[in-house]
Amino acid sequence: MTGSPSSPGFPDSPPSPGTPSRTVSSPAPSARSGRPATAGRRRRRPPLSIAALCLAGALTATVAPTAAAEPAHAAADPLARYHRQHLDWKSCLLGPDDETGKELQQADAQCADVTVPLNYAEPDGRTITVAISRIRATDTARRVGALLLNGGGPGGQSIGDPPWVRTAMKQVGERYDVVGVDPRFVGRSTPLDCRWPTGSFVRGAGSDRAGFDRMVALAEELAGRCRTHQGDVLPYVTTRNTARDMDVVRAALGEPRISYLGYSYGTYLGQVYATMFPRRTDRVVLDGLVDPGRYNPRLLRGTEPANRHALKGWAAWAAARHTAYGLGRTPGEVLAAVDGVQAAAGRTPLPIGGHRVDEHVVPVVVFSGLSQDNDAAYADLARAVRDMRRAVGGRTVTPSPWLAETLGFLLDGSDSAYGSVQTAILCGDVSAPRSPEVYWRDVQRARAKDPLFGPVTNNINPCAFWDPPRERPTTVRGDLPALLVNATGDPRSIYRNAQTVRRMWPSSRLVTLRGADQHAVYGVYGSSCADKAVNTYLATGRLPAKDVTCDRPSG
Image: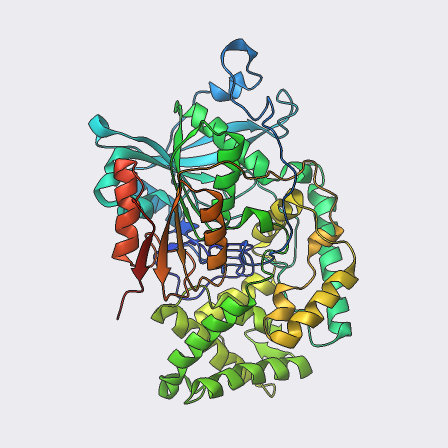
C-alpha cells in the first residue's frame, strides 16, 4: 500500500506522478508506491504496493512465536552471534552519483550492514546482509530510543528515509535514533533479481479471453524466471523473516525495544512484528493501513471504488484546466478521453517513446497516477493521458518525464529487482488461487462494474504459479496501543482497512484525514493536524484520548 511514501503502498506499481521530496511505496501497481518508501528524489512507485496489486485472501492460522523468532537470553539463544554482532558504521555514500548517499551524508547519517540468517530454522547456515542507515539522537538527555522505518512496497527501500522523516518529526526527532532499513533482498541489502523484462507484474487483463490468456502466459513466465534464477532463496523471502530480521537489527543496536513508523505494506510488517515479538515495541505509528485479514497476493481487489472516486476527482481538476491539457471541458469529457485511449490501445498499440503501449498497460498507467491528489501528481497524469491520446492513430509521441519513467518501469527490465522481490514476498507469504479460471471469472465480474480498473485489480499474477509458502501466515492478534493514520479516500490502502484495525486493537487510536484521495499522510501530505498528532505521540508516548479527524488542507 507502495513505491513512497513510495508509491505507498501495496504491491506498488510504476512511479507515481508528482512525487514529492519524500515518497512512500504503495501496493503494487504502482509498483512504486505513493508511499514514503524513500525520500529525497527517489522515484516513487505507484501504490499497488499492497494496495496495489492484490487484495483478497484471509489469514487464519495462528502462529505461535518460535525459538528462532523470540529473542532469548544467555547462551541458550540460538541467534546470539547475530544479536551481539558488532556493527561497522561507515559513510552511506557509494559514489559520486549516489544521490541517496549524498542526502544521508548531509544529514550526518551513517550506514552499516547487519548479518542475519537466510533461514532462521538453520541459524548456523547461510547468511545474508540487511543494510541500515542511522541518524543518531542529538538530545541524548531525553533520548527515547531507535525508530525503525519501512516505507512500504513490499520491496521498497527505506535506507534513504531518515533525513525526511527526521525533518517531519521536528524537534521530537532530536530524541530518536532514526533508522532506515532496506529489508532482506531489497536495495542495498543482499539482492534478489529474477531478470524480468518488467519492473512489475501488474497489468490489465485486456478486453477479451485472448488478452487474458496472454497475461496468464506472462505470469507463468515471470514465475518461471524466479524459480530459474533465485529458486534457492525464494522460500525465505517473506514478511515473517523480515520481521525476524528487524528483531536482529533491534538487538544489534542494543535496544530492548524499538519504536516503528510504517507506511502501506509497512503497516502489515509492523503488525506482524508486534505479533511475533510482543514485548519489543515501544511507540508504533502505522500510516495507510493494510487489513491483516485480507493480506494476500491479490491486494488490489476491492480498491476499485476508491480508485474510481480518485479518477473522478482528477477528471474535475483536468476539466478546469482544459486550456492546458485539452482533455475536455467537463469531468465527463475527460473520463471519455481516458476511455477513448483505452479503446484505441485495444485496437492498435500506441507508439510512445520507443514503447508500444497496449490495452494491458494503459489502465495501469492511469491507476499509477492516482495515489496522490496534489496538483503536481494531477498534472503528471494529465500530461500522460494527453500524450497517449496524441499517439492514437499511430503518431509517434515523445512522452512527458513521468510517463516515460512509468513506461520504462513497466516495459523494460531496468527495475527487474523491484518487481522480483515484491512478488517473492507476496507469493511467499500467502498462497494464491492456482486456476486461471478463478481470475477470469473475477475479471469478468469486476469489468461489469468498472471496465477500466476491474481488469487490473482482479488480474492473474505470478503467485498462481509459485511454490506454496513454507510457513503459514501470521494471525495478527492481541491489542496494540498504536497510532493509526489513514485518508478517507486512500486508493491503495482503503479507509475500511484502518477502521478494521482500529476495531481489532481497542487501545489504538485513529487519525483520519477527511476528504483526501491520498496514500500516505504523515510527513508527506502537508496536514499540520495529522503531523501534530503523530509528533505529540512520538514525543510523549501517550495516544490521543480519542480518535482524531483532520480535514484536507485547503488551497
